[in-house]
Image (tube, rainbow, N blue to C red; front, side, top):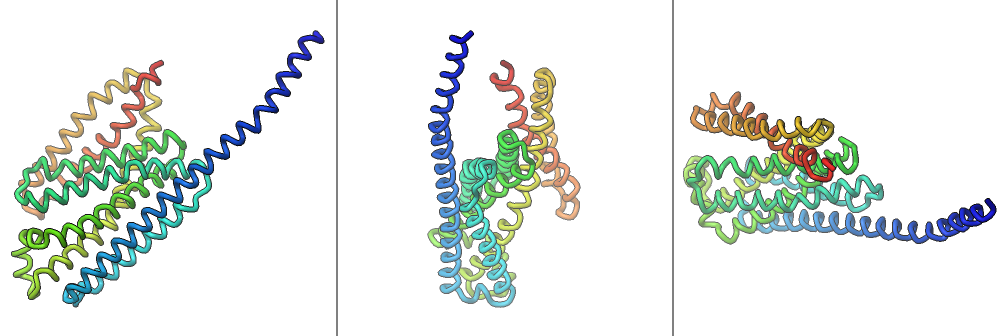
Length: 314
């Protein structure tokens, strides 16, 4: 018994000696994630500054773009971009481990979503007569990525609020990438970018096609700056709720869900395709139904994969 007590005492002493090393490793990890958040926030804030500078340069070249309604568009963009910049500063100073985890998940997916939006913009620029598949595919990819962000953030943090934070940060990064690239492309391929706007330019009464192009870009940018966080809120939340629900299913139920989700996606795509054949005034009910069906199906993709992955089965 005395010998056993000596062994236990030595184990306790050894454990106490090991804890400082473990604490040091945890502190190193915390410092690394803090530096990562500083880098992510700083890079995004720099992106916001670049976008503001690009807008300023373009407005200086085409002052007619901000006459009349263009002036309100300009200040709407500036205000929204400053809000994005404040969000980037907020990210830079987060110290909670779970918040930093959510931010990292959004930061990983944000450039992917930005690349999807940039590719879609390039198609609009160089392939004006796109078929329905090319029009709807970027939207479906956006739904899937935002749903995956919310699902992954919930899986790591068990917090719906932090799932939304991850989705919002993904949207911020993607939108800043899209607007900055789109403004540069408008400069590099200005003549090409003006071609699809010829009829609208003729009806606008403006004299300078470059100024009209910039006003159109400011309008599109303001819409993106508002809509992307809304999409992120909705679909990251759907992804998080789906993960919380689906990962509790038995494996057979998850397999059934994997079979049903593609059918729901096809139904959503069919509703959108049918809406595309109707007059604009008759489209809203079918567009809403199609977006809802496709969004739910795509947002459930990551939760279903999480429920079926081999580590869970084991």
